[in-house]
Image (cartoon, rainbow, N blue to C red; front, side, top):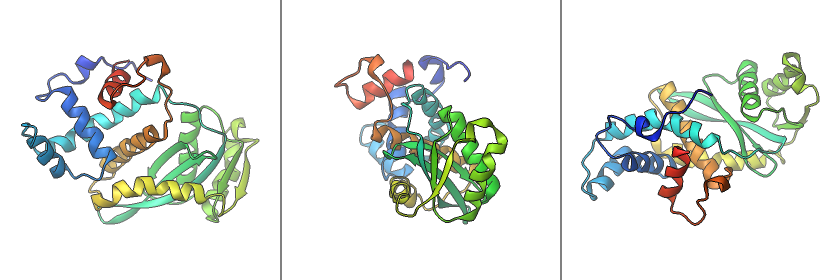
Length: 238
C-alpha cells in the first residue's frame, strides 16, 4: 500500500471544510439520500453547494476512505459464503460478487460486467489479496461457473489446495440476506451511468456496511464513547 497523505494534504484546495465533505460522503453512502437531498440538507445549514460537487466528492474520497479504514480491519472467518447479486449500469445488468463468513462479516466484493468462470476467479483472487489467507471452505449455490472456478483455483497457488467446496442453498441464506444491506442503498439510485463510478460507489457502500457490522478494531485510537464525526476524523488522520 502506498504511503497515505496527511489530512491537510488530502483536503487541500477544497472550497468547503473537510468535515462537510466527510459528512456528505458518509451520509450519501450510508443512507437512502440523493445528491439533491443532501444539497437541501446542507442549505438548511447555510451551506450552498451543487449536487455535482457532492457526486465528485464521493468519487474522489470513497476510495481514500476505504484505504484508511481498511488498516483497522479485523480478520474474518475462513468459512466463506459466496454469491452474486446484480445491478444496472447504463441500463445493462452487471454482477456484484460478494462473500461473508459464517458470522456474517463481509469478506470481500467485486463488481463485474460478466458472470462466468473468469469473473468468479477474479473475485477469489481479490478476496485472497484482501484476507491474506484462503478459506477452509467455500459455500456456493448451484451456479456451475462459480463451482468450476473454485475447483480450478488450486492451479493458481498452494493457498487454495485445502479449500473445500460445498453447495448449500440453506447455508447461503446468510449471504443472500446480507445482499439486502447493499441493495437497499443502491435500489433508490435507480442504476448507474458509468461502470467505474458504480464500482467506486459500491466500494463506499460496502465500507459503511462493514462499519455498521463492527468489523474494525479501533481500540488503539482511544475513541470510546466519541461521536461518529470524531471517530471518522481519528481513523482518517491515523
